Image (cartoon, rainbow, N blue to C red; front, top):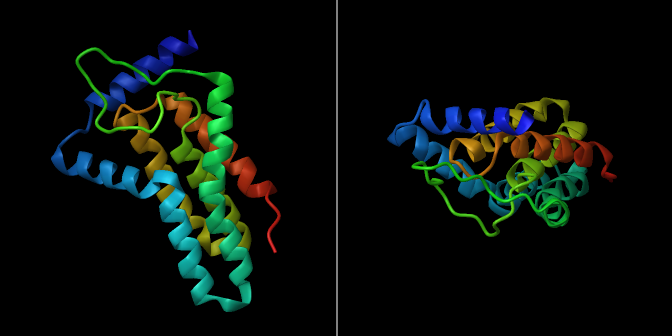
Length: 164
């Protein structure tokens, strides 16, 4: 039953609110989220902007790429293949054929959670994390549950990682 709901949600995300501009934005967010790059960049910028919290920002930014490694270990255990919707090919590529959980979501929510621990006003970064996560099923790269699981895993990681 949950699998059918996941597929129906994925189909809805792949067929609604699509247009050149929306797809371009989601692709750009996907590229920015690759390997946690946007989060590493944000961490570096904030480390430069706030030398007194430099080490914490660097750890929080590096958490993005580190979360990708943890995420891949989970993917290897679960081994869920990426979704296939007849007549709706994915609108992007991926480094592996494994889907669960979404690495983009894991890295994004891990960093948003860690950065919010450093500075509560950084909570606005959850908007970026959510946009990156939503983009994965929107582009057909993941089931919605992959993005949700990544968000939960990432949030846990961001709340648990020790910050200097």
